[in-house]
Structure formats: C-alpha cells, structure tokens
Amino acid sequence: MYFYGTQSVNELGHLTIGGVDTIDLAHMYGTPLNVYDVALFRERAAAFKETFKNVGVRAQVAYASKAFSSIAIYEVAEQQGLSLDVVSGGELFTAVSAGFPRERIHFHGNNKSFSELQYAFDEKIGCIVIDNFSEITMVKDIAETRKEKMNVLIRVTPGVEAHTHDYITTGQEDSKFGFDLKNGQTDEAFLQLHDHPYLELLGMHCHIGSQIFESDAFCFAAEVLMKKMVAWRDDHDFVCTVLNLGGGFGIRYTEEDEPLHPSAYVEEMAKVVLSMTRSHNYPVPEIWVEPGRSLVGDAGTTLYTAGSTKEVPDVRKYIAVDGGMSDNIRPALYGAKYTAATANRIEEPHVDKVTLAGKCCESGDKLIEEAFLADPTEGDIIAVFCTGAYGYSMASNYNRLPKPAIVFCENGEHQLVVRRETYEDVVRLDIPLQSVKREETV
View 1 (cartoon, helix red, strand yellow):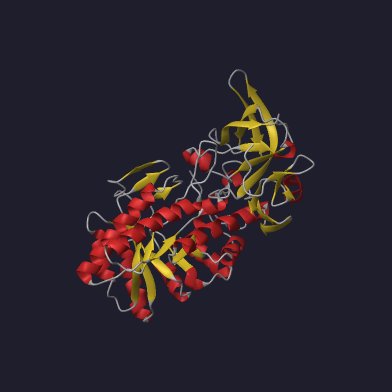
View 2 (view 1 turned 120 degrees about the vertical axis):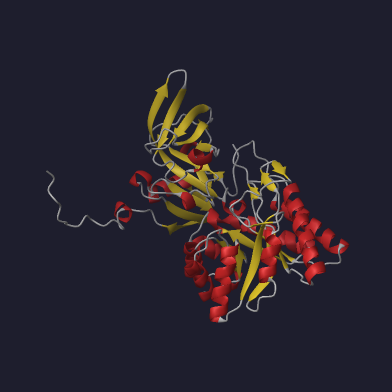
C-alpha cells in the first residue's frame, strides 16, 4: 500500500495522518470527513521555494487556492511565505478574512465583474492578471477614476497545450482564457497597457494545463513568452520584470501516475529562462508559479463510513458510502481516478475488488470503479486518498446533503477548521412561499 506524506499505521492497525488516528477522527467529527496532512503541504511549499533559491532566481510561489480555499489553509500558506492566487471575489474575501498580506495576492479570472475589480483596488492587492479587453477597459476606468495604481499581468495563451504526458505546440488558441499570442491579441493588449499612468504592467502570465507529469511543455511555454518579452524590449524599449508560468504540476493519484518532484519542474523552467536571458542580454525576470493541486491534492484524505452492500452476480460488488459526488464530483464529472483503503483494518490484505458507490441518486455516482479493500463491511471507515484538491472546492448540496467537515492534522494534533454543515445550514437561504391571492381556475 502506498502511503502519502505522514500517513502511517498505529498499533491498532488503524490509518494515521499527522500522527492522529483517523478512526478516532471519524468517531469524533463524523463522516464524510476531509483530513489534511499539514506537514505535507509545508514540505511541498518549501520544496518549490528552496529550488528557486538554489538556482538563484527571484521568485514568488503563489498557492492556486481554487484547489481548496479556506481561512485556515490561507493562514498556513502565509506561514510558509507563499503568495496567493484567487479567482473570485469570494476567494479574495476569504483571503482578507484570513489576514493574508494583500501585496502577495494575485487576482485571476476570465470574467471578473466590475465590483470584484473595485474590491481588488479597495484591498490594494499585489496584482491583477488581466484576461481580456473588456477587463482592460474596466481596470483602466477604476484606476483613472480613483487615480490609484495597480500592478497587472497579461494572461497569454502561448500555443502550448499540456495534459499529463501529451502536449502540442500548435494549439490552445480556442480557450476562454487569455489573449492569443498567435493572432496579435497579446500585442494589442500590451499596447493598451504598457504606458498607462496608473497601471504598472509587470509582464506576462500563462497556464498550459493541469496534472502535467513532464517539464517539456513548461519549458516550451517559457521560451515562447521570453521571445515575446525580448520583442517588446526591442520594438518598444519595454522590459518585463515578471514571468508567470502558472501551475498544473501533477501528483500521484494511482500507481499509473509518475509525477516529477517540484524541484524538477522549477529547475528546468529556470534553466530555459536563464539561457534565454543570457543569449538575448535580457534582465532576468522574477519567475512566478502557481501550484495548487501539487500542494494540497495528496495532502487530503476523505474518510467515509461504509453502508449498504449490493452484489450483482458475475458483474460487480457495490459498497456504498455516506458521501459521493456531492463532496467529490470529479469521478462523475471527468472520470478522475482514486485509490482507497479500509482505514480501520489497514494492515489486512486489500484484495476484495469492489465498486465504491456514493449515496446520491445518480447511477454515475461512483467514487472508484475498481477499489481493492479489506473485506469491507457496514460500519468500516473507508479512506479515499488524494482528495485534497477540487473536492471540497467543488462540493455541492445535491440531494440536500450537507457539506463535510474539514480537519487539519500535524505533529500528533488535530484541529477542526471547517465545521460540518447542518440541515439548518442547508435551508438557511430558503424563503418560504408568501401568501398570494390566486385566481380561481374555471
């Protein structure tokens, strides 16, 4: 069995995370329960930062918090000296509530509203990543009306598409994000921004994909953007001070996945940037990256309680749990794969092949098509690994199921950081039907 981070087995044969017995956690807080290994988050954050330091490049490592947003995780990110990538007014409000340093907050999004942009100015955040021409107009309007400065980046689609091991160098023009590099949109955005009295254009940003296991596509994107930066210097006497290469660094969900260590991605990208700056006599820009999944993905484990069993002879055996697509929609949405274990009997042979089903009223609510567990029976605690990214963030109240609680574990201690929703929470925003006069039907 593969253990992530601080996961281990105690003398009772129970799975532990951060030195805490997961069965105790399940009994104390109920299930479904999201458990985070805080030490693993810290370890990953330190690895990104340390590698930039070792290669001698100024950098910002921004936690891409759409993967998992909460006040507590923002506080841990701040403790690790990370910057923060937010993509909505709600995430920005959470960061503000956490007391996160505003100068290290970067605001993304392809359809930021005028009020969200005003909020970013109100909080004097570190940078707005501009995504389209409408946004240029709005940001200019706000800055000029207020006579306030704001740092901006131009988000670019560089013609690189990367998904796991496959990438092409001709595509990704058809994207809802960013200015296209090939058709001249990026240059037009540059001309509208580079000499504005209140908007400080720092440079360019790109994001080429997600769950990427190789560094080649990142390196190609770095080369493409560096060439454009050199062209802007030569043609307009403008030097970019920031190159943001985004995120998308992969993690190990199953034994089929073979991600690189964070240092490998950073070293290869930095190598390309340094080579380009030397060959073109260009000042080395500060490199920004945005790890999200690679910080929290395998740091998260979801605990469920096993319920009903159904056997379809010669087909499969279903084990249902007390959660499902309401707390993790990724398997139903795009076929994401996970592994699981019987947490209360973790040392027993995991040889029983079952389909781990959720409790939602959807045939497609299957968390794992082929899970190998230790003779699962009703009442067992089932741990599904690597659920730390895009589980809680994409959770819903489908079937009016309350969202799960979240616990952080570290150094033998545990803390509730998001309480479980109650049924009262589920109906809190509902408004009863008012008495109205209805016309009688004939």
